[in-house]
Length: 473
Image 1 (cartoon, one colour):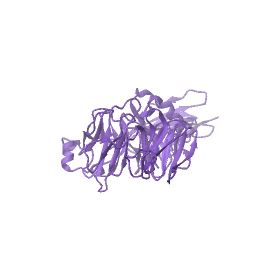
Image 2 (cartoon, helix red, strand yellow):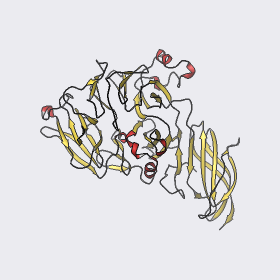
Image 3 (tube, one colour):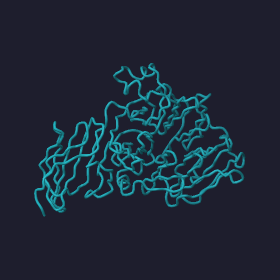
Image 4 (tube, one colour):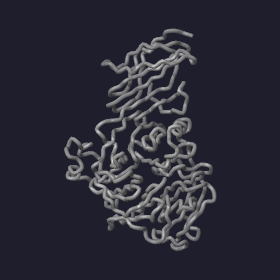
């Protein structure tokens, strides 16, 4: 029996998938999630925005923001490079790159800019740009969305190739108000833009003068409920709507969580804290990962929900952190590593690891100590996989005597059995795997489910059973 996909929204009885896939990565088989390893000193407070880019010479630049400060990472050390800011309520820092300029906005303060080729600190973006919660680069324009406090349904764009020109009509700059769809909740740029509202998605496409841009609604009654859920890989843009997870190709949207994890997610997530959601792409494993706060976390961001777009399956993990994003590694010398770690034993990865090579994509997070961290720790998270309840032999009682997990590492197995739909289920304790490779049982019933808990592991593919028919109805 191979471990199938995780589908907690289905009933446990005869669920064709798994009812639990915890602290594992989904794919053709399940892989482990490594513990966090700190890669920097600490910010002064909770990180509420992170961004990475590299210049034309391949040099990496990493930026982060707290409620009051903006930071730049140099040789593993964060330095405050801005003035004092005020980021309150549900606002977060958003970063974009336009040429050599890194643009940062928190929706409350003046939009900030730094030229990575010549400047050492952020300052107000030139011209008269409005304050905005969201940004995107569409073709040769900086586009702002959810303007000021009274224009939540408005976008405004700069002059062509001039992010300091904001006078309407000058250098093709302009604005657009959307009468329907609610507040703008996020934007994606590129050759065309996608503007997400609470209940609408609009495609923004450059036409040239005199109209400059066309705006075509591609979804009505469907939008993104939080900006941190919106993330792109290639032409795919993933997002969380008010009825579940979707992906759009820029022309239409497709559900990816229906009858799988949507109901489970909304039952678990703290909806008052959805503004804390962030997302990241792991291109090597073909994963999109969303970070969020659960109802039991007291507002702490403590959960990940993970989607493999190639295999179209899901998993989840528990991890206290602040946000998640895809960063670009710095090019570390031996001296840089020595400055970060007191002894060689404390270095979390081998010296030839890709995390020390500049410009490498790294799945990163900020841990609860406000430090940049990667999933490269010396151990892996303990995993759990649990099957649905099924009938091994139709209309017959079955005695389970051996469970052979196809999982390496340290494994315990629990078996739950019941005789009829009306009878109470009984669950064994956790039974370890013996030296031969199976967990011994002597439990009978008509219906059974199996739970596997494992540590120090590298892959989980399925399991085999030895059973005996012990009665017929």
